[in-house]
Amino acid sequence: MSNKNYLPLVRKASGIRLARDNILSIIESLTDPFVAVIGLWVVAFIQDGHLDPIYLFLSLIIFFLSYPGESKVTLPLNKGVMSIVATWVILSTLLILFAYTTRYMYLFTTQTIVLWVILTPVMQILALLFLRSIAPLIMTIQGPIKQAVIAGINTQSIELAFRLNDTKLKSTNVIGFFEDRTLKRVSETTDVDVLLNGDMGISILGHTDGLADYIKTHQVNIIYLSLPMSGHPRILKLLDDLKDTTASIYFVPDIFMTDIIQGRMGQVDDIPVVAVCETPFTGFNGVIKRTTDILFSLAILLLILPILIIIALGVKLSSPGPVIFKQHRYGLDGKEILVYKFRSMSVCENGRAVTQAIKNDQRVTKFGAFLRKSSLDELPQFINVLQGRMSVVGPRPHAVSHNEMYRKLIKGYMIRHKVKPGITGWAQVNGLRGETETLDKMKARIDYDLEYLRNWSPKLDIYIIFKTISVVFKGEKNAY
Image (cartoon, rainbow, N blue to C red):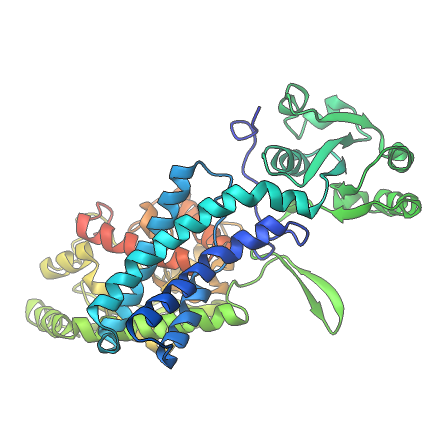
Protein backbone atom coordinates (compact mmCIF):
# COMPACT_ATOMS: atom_id res chain seq x y z
CA MET A 1 0.00 0.00 0.00
CA SER A 2 1.45 3.34 -0.99
CA ASN A 3 1.67 6.14 1.52
CA LYS A 4 0.70 8.80 -1.00
CA ASN A 5 -2.95 8.90 -0.03
CA TYR A 6 -2.30 9.02 3.69
CA LEU A 7 0.77 10.99 4.57
CA PRO A 8 1.26 14.74 4.20
CA LEU A 9 4.08 16.00 2.06
CA VAL A 10 7.25 16.43 4.03
CA ARG A 11 9.11 19.72 3.74
CA LYS A 12 12.24 19.11 1.74
CA ALA A 13 15.68 20.41 2.48
CA SER A 14 16.04 21.42 -1.13
CA GLY A 15 19.78 22.01 -1.01
CA ILE A 16 20.32 18.29 -0.31
CA ARG A 17 18.95 16.37 -3.25
CA LEU A 18 21.10 13.35 -3.96
CA ALA A 19 22.06 10.44 -1.75
CA ARG A 20 25.82 10.05 -2.05
CA ASP A 21 25.49 6.24 -2.14
CA ASN A 22 22.69 6.12 -4.73
CA ILE A 23 24.48 5.81 -8.06
CA LEU A 24 21.22 5.74 -10.04
CA SER A 25 20.10 9.09 -8.59
CA ILE A 26 23.41 10.69 -9.49
CA ILE A 27 23.28 9.33 -13.05
CA GLU A 28 19.68 10.54 -13.47
CA SER A 29 20.60 14.07 -12.35
CA LEU A 30 23.31 14.25 -15.03
CA THR A 31 21.61 12.45 -17.93
CA ASP A 32 19.34 15.20 -19.33
CA PRO A 33 21.94 18.01 -19.05
CA PHE A 34 24.67 15.89 -20.66
CA VAL A 35 22.41 14.65 -23.45
CA ALA A 36 21.28 18.23 -24.22
CA VAL A 37 24.92 19.29 -24.52
CA ILE A 38 25.86 16.24 -26.62
CA GLY A 39 22.89 16.94 -28.88
CA LEU A 40 24.20 20.45 -29.48
CA TRP A 41 27.68 19.11 -30.27
CA VAL A 42 26.27 16.52 -32.70
CA VAL A 43 24.39 19.26 -34.55
CA ALA A 44 27.53 21.43 -34.61
CA PHE A 45 29.61 18.66 -36.21
CA ILE A 46 26.84 17.83 -38.69
CA GLN A 47 26.44 21.45 -39.79
CA ASP A 48 29.94 22.93 -39.38
CA GLY A 49 32.26 19.96 -38.97
CA HIS A 50 33.76 21.44 -35.78
CA LEU A 51 32.90 23.14 -32.48
CA ASP A 52 33.02 26.94 -32.52
CA PRO A 53 33.49 28.79 -29.19
CA ILE A 54 29.84 29.92 -29.32
CA TYR A 55 28.74 26.27 -29.05
CA LEU A 56 30.93 25.74 -26.00
CA PHE A 57 29.50 28.85 -24.34
CA LEU A 58 25.96 27.72 -25.15
CA SER A 59 26.78 24.27 -23.76
CA LEU A 60 27.57 25.75 -20.36
CA ILE A 61 24.30 27.70 -20.31
CA ILE A 62 22.28 24.62 -21.29
CA PHE A 63 23.96 22.40 -18.72
CA PHE A 64 23.44 24.71 -15.77
CA LEU A 65 19.86 25.56 -16.77
CA SER A 66 18.92 21.88 -16.94
CA TYR A 67 20.95 20.53 -13.98
CA PRO A 68 19.95 18.55 -12.02
CA GLY A 69 17.73 16.47 -14.26
CA GLU A 70 14.47 15.20 -12.81
CA SER A 71 14.07 11.59 -11.71
CA LYS A 72 11.99 9.81 -14.37
CA VAL A 73 13.15 6.17 -14.26
CA THR A 74 10.44 5.12 -11.82
CA LEU A 75 7.70 7.13 -13.57
CA PRO A 76 5.34 5.54 -16.11
CA LEU A 77 7.00 5.83 -19.53
CA ASN A 78 4.37 8.21 -20.95
CA LYS A 79 4.81 10.63 -18.03
CA GLY A 80 8.59 10.48 -18.36
CA VAL A 81 8.38 11.32 -22.07
CA MET A 82 5.90 14.14 -21.43
CA SER A 83 8.22 15.58 -18.78
CA ILE A 84 11.16 15.55 -21.21
CA VAL A 85 9.18 17.22 -24.01
CA ALA A 86 7.60 19.88 -21.77
CA THR A 87 10.90 20.80 -20.14
CA TRP A 88 12.70 21.00 -23.48
CA VAL A 89 9.99 23.12 -25.12
CA ILE A 90 10.26 25.68 -22.31
CA LEU A 91 14.07 25.70 -22.22
CA SER A 92 14.62 25.84 -25.99
CA THR A 93 11.98 28.54 -26.44
CA LEU A 94 13.65 30.74 -23.84
CA LEU A 95 17.10 30.22 -25.37
CA ILE A 96 15.83 31.04 -28.86
CA LEU A 97 14.14 34.17 -27.52
CA PHE A 98 17.42 35.29 -25.95
CA ALA A 99 19.31 34.57 -29.17
CA TYR A 100 16.79 36.50 -31.24
CA THR A 101 16.60 39.60 -29.05
CA THR A 102 20.36 39.79 -28.43
CA ARG A 103 21.18 39.38 -32.15
CA TYR A 104 23.07 36.11 -31.63
CA MET A 105 20.55 34.27 -33.80
CA TYR A 106 22.51 35.16 -36.94
CA LEU A 107 25.37 32.94 -35.72
CA PHE A 108 23.24 29.86 -36.39
CA THR A 109 21.42 28.79 -39.52
CA THR A 110 17.70 28.00 -39.36
CA GLN A 111 18.52 24.40 -40.24
CA THR A 112 20.92 24.18 -37.28
CA ILE A 113 18.32 25.50 -34.82
CA VAL A 114 15.52 23.26 -36.10
CA LEU A 115 17.75 20.18 -36.06
CA TRP A 116 18.92 20.90 -32.52
CA VAL A 117 15.39 21.53 -31.20
CA ILE A 118 14.14 18.24 -32.68
CA LEU A 119 17.19 16.05 -32.05
CA THR A 120 17.75 16.85 -28.37
CA PRO A 121 14.42 15.60 -26.92
CA VAL A 122 14.65 12.50 -29.13
CA MET A 123 18.09 11.76 -27.69
CA GLN A 124 16.82 12.40 -24.16
CA ILE A 125 13.93 9.98 -24.65
CA LEU A 126 16.32 7.33 -25.98
CA ALA A 127 18.60 7.97 -22.99
CA LEU A 128 15.63 7.51 -20.66
CA LEU A 129 14.72 4.19 -22.32
CA PHE A 130 18.32 3.02 -22.03
CA LEU A 131 18.58 4.10 -18.40
CA ARG A 132 15.31 2.33 -17.56
CA SER A 133 16.65 -0.87 -19.11
CA ILE A 134 19.94 -0.81 -17.19
CA ALA A 135 18.58 0.58 -13.91
CA PRO A 136 18.30 -2.88 -12.28
CA LEU A 137 21.89 -3.61 -13.34
CA ILE A 138 23.08 -0.31 -11.82
CA MET A 139 21.36 -1.17 -8.56
CA THR A 140 22.98 -4.62 -8.62
CA ILE A 141 26.44 -3.14 -9.24
CA GLN A 142 25.87 -0.78 -6.35
CA GLY A 143 25.60 -3.80 -4.08
CA PRO A 144 22.97 -5.66 -2.08
CA ILE A 145 20.00 -3.82 -0.59
CA LYS A 146 20.96 -2.32 2.75
CA GLN A 147 18.82 -3.08 5.78
CA ALA A 148 17.83 -0.13 7.95
CA VAL A 149 15.96 0.63 11.15
CA ILE A 150 14.58 3.92 12.41
CA ALA A 151 14.70 5.18 15.98
CA GLY A 152 11.65 7.29 16.69
CA ILE A 153 8.13 7.31 15.23
CA ASN A 154 6.86 10.62 13.88
CA THR A 155 5.49 11.98 10.63
CA GLN A 156 8.98 12.53 9.29
CA SER A 157 10.23 9.01 10.04
CA ILE A 158 7.11 7.30 8.70
CA GLU A 159 7.38 9.26 5.47
CA LEU A 160 11.07 8.35 5.24
CA ALA A 161 10.28 4.64 5.69
CA PHE A 162 7.61 4.62 3.01
CA ARG A 163 9.71 6.56 0.53
CA LEU A 164 12.63 4.18 0.96
CA ASN A 165 10.46 1.05 0.68
CA ASP A 166 7.85 2.15 -1.86
CA THR A 167 9.97 1.82 -5.00
CA LYS A 168 10.99 -1.02 -7.29
CA LEU A 169 14.56 0.25 -7.51
CA LYS A 170 15.32 0.68 -3.85
CA SER A 171 18.78 0.61 -2.36
CA THR A 172 17.61 0.54 1.27
CA ASN A 173 14.94 -1.53 3.00
CA VAL A 174 13.48 -0.30 6.29
CA ILE A 175 12.84 -3.26 8.62
CA GLY A 176 11.11 -1.41 11.40
CA PHE A 177 11.03 1.20 14.17
CA PHE A 178 12.31 1.55 17.70
CA GLU A 179 10.19 3.75 19.96
CA ASP A 180 10.02 4.34 23.72
CA ARG A 181 6.53 5.81 23.84
CA THR A 182 3.35 3.78 23.80
CA LEU A 183 1.35 3.70 20.58
CA LYS A 184 -1.37 5.68 22.34
CA ARG A 185 1.05 8.52 23.04
CA VAL A 186 2.53 8.36 19.54
CA SER A 187 -0.93 8.50 17.96
CA GLU A 188 -1.63 11.80 19.73
CA THR A 189 0.82 13.57 17.41
CA THR A 190 1.32 11.15 14.50
CA ASP A 191 -0.95 9.10 12.24
CA VAL A 192 0.31 5.57 12.99
CA ASP A 193 -2.66 3.73 11.47
CA VAL A 194 -1.07 3.84 8.04
CA LEU A 195 2.03 2.21 9.55
CA LEU A 196 0.26 -0.52 11.52
CA ASN A 197 -2.32 -1.35 8.84
CA GLY A 198 0.12 -1.22 5.91
CA ASP A 199 1.45 -4.19 3.97
CA MET A 200 5.05 -3.05 3.46
CA GLY A 201 6.58 -5.20 6.17
CA ILE A 202 7.47 -2.36 8.53
CA SER A 203 6.91 -3.11 12.22
CA ILE A 204 7.77 -1.81 15.68
CA LEU A 205 10.79 -3.78 16.91
CA GLY A 206 11.14 -2.53 20.48
CA HIS A 207 12.42 0.29 22.69
CA THR A 208 15.50 2.34 21.85
CA ASP A 209 17.34 0.79 24.81
CA GLY A 210 17.39 -2.47 22.87
CA LEU A 211 18.49 -0.93 19.57
CA ALA A 212 22.24 -1.56 20.01
CA ASP A 213 21.71 -5.23 20.91
CA TYR A 214 19.36 -5.65 17.94
CA ILE A 215 21.98 -4.23 15.58
CA LYS A 216 24.59 -6.67 16.86
CA THR A 217 22.38 -9.72 16.32
CA HIS A 218 20.79 -8.74 12.97
CA GLN A 219 22.24 -7.72 9.64
CA VAL A 220 21.43 -4.01 9.94
CA ASN A 221 23.52 -1.62 7.84
CA ILE A 222 21.90 1.76 8.52
CA ILE A 223 20.30 3.47 11.51
CA TYR A 224 18.16 6.58 11.07
CA LEU A 225 17.70 8.63 14.24
CA SER A 226 14.42 10.54 14.01
CA LEU A 227 14.15 11.67 17.60
CA PRO A 228 12.95 15.08 18.81
CA MET A 229 15.65 17.62 19.57
CA SER A 230 14.14 17.92 23.04
CA GLY A 231 15.44 14.39 23.67
CA HIS A 232 19.08 15.50 23.52
CA PRO A 233 20.33 13.38 26.50
CA ARG A 234 18.55 10.31 25.12
CA ILE A 235 20.17 10.83 21.71
CA LEU A 236 23.64 11.11 23.28
CA LYS A 237 23.13 7.92 25.28
CA LEU A 238 21.89 6.09 22.19
CA LEU A 239 24.87 7.26 20.14
CA ASP A 240 27.17 6.08 22.90
CA ASP A 241 25.53 2.63 22.86
CA LEU A 242 25.82 2.42 19.07
CA LYS A 243 29.59 2.99 19.08
CA ASP A 244 29.94 -0.75 19.53
CA THR A 245 28.28 -1.45 16.15
CA THR A 246 29.40 -1.09 12.54
CA ALA A 247 26.14 0.39 11.24
CA SER A 248 26.07 3.75 9.48
CA ILE A 249 24.15 6.32 11.49
CA TYR A 250 22.12 9.21 10.06
CA PHE A 251 20.28 11.88 11.99
CA VAL A 252 16.89 12.82 10.52
CA PRO A 253 16.13 16.24 12.03
CA ASP A 254 12.61 17.02 13.08
CA ILE A 255 12.19 19.71 10.44
CA PHE A 256 8.52 20.16 11.35
CA MET A 257 9.71 22.15 14.36
CA THR A 258 10.77 24.94 12.02
CA ASP A 259 10.37 26.12 8.43
CA ILE A 260 13.30 24.76 6.40
CA ILE A 261 14.27 27.10 3.55
CA GLN A 262 17.07 25.81 1.30
CA GLY A 263 18.45 23.47 3.98
CA ARG A 264 21.98 22.31 3.19
CA MET A 265 25.18 21.17 4.82
CA GLY A 266 28.09 23.57 4.87
CA GLN A 267 31.29 24.53 6.65
CA VAL A 268 32.56 27.65 8.35
CA ASP A 269 36.34 27.42 8.81
CA ASP A 270 36.10 23.61 8.76
CA ILE A 271 33.31 23.62 11.35
CA PRO A 272 30.24 21.76 9.97
CA VAL A 273 27.01 23.74 10.00
CA VAL A 274 23.49 23.06 8.74
CA ALA A 275 21.63 25.83 6.93
CA VAL A 276 18.04 26.05 8.19
CA CYS A 277 16.98 29.26 6.44
CA GLU A 278 19.03 30.42 3.46
CA THR A 279 18.59 32.09 0.09
CA PRO A 280 18.63 29.72 -2.90
CA PHE A 281 20.87 32.17 -4.78
CA THR A 282 24.21 31.36 -3.22
CA GLY A 283 27.34 30.61 -5.24
CA PHE A 284 26.83 29.76 -8.88
CA ASN A 285 23.04 29.80 -8.51
CA GLY A 286 23.31 33.52 -7.84
CA VAL A 287 25.36 33.98 -11.01
CA ILE A 288 22.78 32.08 -13.06
CA LYS A 289 19.91 34.09 -11.58
CA ARG A 290 21.53 37.49 -12.14
CA THR A 291 22.74 36.63 -15.65
CA THR A 292 19.33 35.43 -16.78
CA ASP A 293 17.69 38.50 -15.19
CA ILE A 294 19.96 40.87 -17.15
CA LEU A 295 19.60 39.00 -20.46
CA PHE A 296 15.85 38.58 -20.17
CA SER A 297 15.10 42.15 -19.07
CA LEU A 298 17.35 43.59 -21.80
CA ALA A 299 15.63 41.43 -24.41
CA ILE A 300 12.16 42.44 -23.21
CA LEU A 301 12.96 46.16 -23.01
CA LEU A 302 14.36 46.14 -26.55
CA LEU A 303 11.27 44.35 -27.84
CA ILE A 304 8.69 46.51 -26.06
CA LEU A 305 10.33 49.93 -26.41
CA PRO A 306 7.62 51.18 -28.85
CA ILE A 307 4.93 49.86 -26.48
CA LEU A 308 6.52 51.70 -23.55
CA ILE A 309 6.42 54.97 -25.48
CA ILE A 310 2.75 54.47 -26.44
CA ILE A 311 1.75 53.63 -22.86
CA ALA A 312 3.66 56.64 -21.51
CA LEU A 313 1.73 58.93 -23.90
CA GLY A 314 -1.54 57.24 -22.90
CA VAL A 315 -0.88 57.80 -19.18
CA LYS A 316 0.09 61.45 -19.76
CA LEU A 317 -2.99 62.21 -21.88
CA SER A 318 -5.50 60.26 -19.77
CA SER A 319 -5.00 62.11 -16.46
CA PRO A 320 -2.78 64.77 -14.87
CA GLY A 321 0.29 63.57 -13.02
CA PRO A 322 3.60 61.83 -13.64
CA VAL A 323 3.93 58.96 -16.11
CA ILE A 324 6.00 56.80 -13.77
CA PHE A 325 4.80 56.07 -10.26
CA LYS A 326 7.63 55.40 -7.80
CA GLN A 327 6.77 53.56 -4.62
CA HIS A 328 8.88 52.48 -1.66
CA ARG A 329 8.85 48.69 -1.22
CA TYR A 330 10.90 46.19 0.74
CA GLY A 331 13.57 44.44 -1.31
CA LEU A 332 16.40 42.01 -0.62
CA ASP A 333 17.16 41.60 3.11
CA GLY A 334 14.21 43.83 3.95
CA LYS A 335 15.88 47.00 2.70
CA GLU A 336 13.71 49.69 1.12
CA ILE A 337 13.87 50.09 -2.65
CA LEU A 338 12.09 52.27 -5.22
CA VAL A 339 9.84 50.30 -7.57
CA TYR A 340 8.68 51.76 -10.88
CA LYS A 341 5.22 51.37 -12.39
CA PHE A 342 3.17 53.22 -14.96
CA ARG A 343 0.78 55.40 -12.99
CA SER A 344 -2.69 53.88 -13.08
CA MET A 345 -4.39 56.01 -10.42
CA SER A 346 -5.29 59.64 -10.04
CA VAL A 347 -3.29 59.68 -6.78
CA CYS A 348 0.26 58.62 -5.94
CA GLU A 349 0.19 57.08 -2.47
CA ASN A 350 3.66 56.33 -1.15
CA GLY A 351 3.43 57.06 2.55
CA ARG A 352 3.24 54.90 5.63
CA ALA A 353 -0.49 54.34 5.03
CA VAL A 354 -1.26 52.93 1.59
CA THR A 355 -4.77 51.79 0.70
CA GLN A 356 -4.72 48.61 -1.39
CA ALA A 357 -6.55 48.75 -4.72
CA ILE A 358 -10.00 47.14 -4.61
CA LYS A 359 -12.59 46.23 -7.22
CA ASN A 360 -14.14 49.30 -8.88
CA ASP A 361 -11.63 51.53 -7.08
CA GLN A 362 -12.49 55.16 -7.84
CA ARG A 363 -8.82 56.15 -7.76
CA VAL A 364 -8.04 54.00 -10.83
CA THR A 365 -8.29 55.88 -14.14
CA LYS A 366 -9.97 54.30 -17.16
CA PHE A 367 -6.65 53.89 -18.94
CA GLY A 368 -5.11 52.74 -15.67
CA ALA A 369 -7.75 50.02 -15.32
CA PHE A 370 -6.70 48.66 -18.71
CA LEU A 371 -3.04 48.75 -17.70
CA ARG A 372 -3.69 46.95 -14.42
CA LYS A 373 -5.93 44.34 -16.01
CA SER A 374 -3.31 43.54 -18.66
CA SER A 375 -0.35 43.92 -16.25
CA LEU A 376 1.18 46.51 -18.59
CA ASP A 377 1.62 48.88 -15.64
CA GLU A 378 4.37 46.56 -14.35
CA LEU A 379 6.59 46.87 -17.45
CA PRO A 380 8.88 49.65 -16.07
CA GLN A 381 9.99 47.17 -13.41
CA PHE A 382 12.27 45.57 -16.01
CA ILE A 383 14.37 48.71 -15.44
CA ASN A 384 14.39 47.81 -11.72
CA VAL A 385 15.69 44.38 -12.73
CA LEU A 386 18.59 45.90 -14.68
CA GLN A 387 19.36 48.12 -11.68
CA GLY A 388 19.64 45.01 -9.53
CA ARG A 389 16.76 46.00 -7.24
CA MET A 390 14.40 43.32 -8.50
CA SER A 391 14.37 40.00 -10.33
CA VAL A 392 12.14 38.84 -13.16
CA VAL A 393 10.75 36.06 -10.95
CA GLY A 394 10.40 36.29 -7.19
CA PRO A 395 7.93 37.23 -4.45
CA ARG A 396 5.97 40.34 -5.41
CA PRO A 397 7.01 43.45 -3.44
CA HIS A 398 4.42 44.87 -1.08
CA ALA A 399 4.04 48.44 0.10
CA VAL A 400 6.12 49.24 3.19
CA SER A 401 2.99 49.86 5.27
CA HIS A 402 1.57 46.45 4.31
CA ASN A 403 4.86 44.77 5.18
CA GLU A 404 4.91 46.32 8.63
CA MET A 405 1.34 45.18 9.25
CA TYR A 406 1.58 41.62 7.93
CA ARG A 407 4.98 40.78 9.41
CA LYS A 408 3.30 40.99 12.83
CA LEU A 409 0.37 38.82 11.77
CA ILE A 410 1.94 36.09 9.61
CA LYS A 411 4.73 33.91 10.95
CA GLY A 412 7.68 33.74 8.56
CA TYR A 413 6.46 36.70 6.49
CA MET A 414 9.87 38.37 6.24
CA ILE A 415 11.59 35.19 4.98
CA ARG A 416 10.32 36.11 1.50
CA HIS A 417 12.82 38.98 1.56
CA LYS A 418 15.80 36.63 1.48
CA VAL A 419 15.56 37.06 -2.30
CA LYS A 420 14.95 40.04 -4.55
CA PRO A 421 11.27 40.80 -5.24
CA GLY A 422 10.01 39.80 -8.67
CA ILE A 423 7.88 41.19 -11.47
CA THR A 424 5.97 37.93 -11.33
CA GLY A 425 6.00 35.08 -8.86
CA TRP A 426 4.80 31.61 -7.93
CA ALA A 427 1.85 33.03 -5.97
CA GLN A 428 0.71 35.20 -8.88
CA VAL A 429 0.58 32.34 -11.42
CA ASN A 430 -1.44 30.33 -8.91
CA GLY A 431 -4.28 32.85 -8.77
CA LEU A 432 -3.08 35.01 -5.86
CA ARG A 433 -2.69 38.26 -7.70
CA GLY A 434 -4.24 41.60 -6.85
CA GLU A 435 -6.19 42.46 -3.73
CA THR A 436 -5.61 40.44 -0.56
CA GLU A 437 -8.54 41.70 1.49
CA THR A 438 -8.33 38.93 4.09
CA LEU A 439 -5.51 37.64 6.26
CA ASP A 440 -6.04 34.12 4.87
CA LYS A 441 -5.44 35.34 1.31
CA MET A 442 -2.22 37.06 2.28
CA LYS A 443 -1.09 33.99 4.21
CA ALA A 444 -1.78 31.83 1.15
CA ARG A 445 0.34 34.19 -0.95
CA ILE A 446 3.19 33.99 1.57
CA ASP A 447 2.95 30.17 1.60
CA TYR A 448 3.49 30.16 -2.17
CA ASP A 449 6.39 32.60 -1.85
CA LEU A 450 8.12 30.36 0.69
CA GLU A 451 7.42 27.30 -1.45
CA TYR A 452 9.23 29.09 -4.29
CA LEU A 453 12.26 29.66 -2.06
CA ARG A 454 12.32 25.99 -1.02
CA ASN A 455 12.08 24.60 -4.53
CA TRP A 456 13.78 27.18 -6.75
CA SER A 457 15.45 26.03 -9.93
CA PRO A 458 16.07 27.70 -13.31
CA LYS A 459 13.35 25.46 -14.76
CA LEU A 460 10.84 26.71 -12.18
CA ASP A 461 11.64 30.32 -13.16
CA ILE A 462 11.13 29.46 -16.83
CA TYR A 463 7.82 27.77 -16.06
CA ILE A 464 6.60 30.80 -14.07
CA ILE A 465 7.54 33.16 -16.92
CA PHE A 466 5.58 31.16 -19.49
CA LYS A 467 2.69 30.67 -17.07
CA THR A 468 2.62 34.44 -16.50
CA ILE A 469 2.38 35.07 -20.24
CA SER A 470 -0.53 32.62 -20.40
CA VAL A 471 -2.29 34.27 -17.44
CA VAL A 472 -1.88 37.75 -18.92
CA PHE A 473 -3.36 36.73 -22.27
CA LYS A 474 -6.25 34.88 -20.64
CA GLY A 475 -6.93 37.73 -18.25
CA GLU A 476 -7.02 37.60 -14.48
CA LYS A 477 -10.20 38.33 -12.54
CA ASN A 478 -8.25 39.59 -9.52
CA ALA A 479 -6.33 42.22 -11.53
CA TYR A 480 -7.91 45.59 -10.83
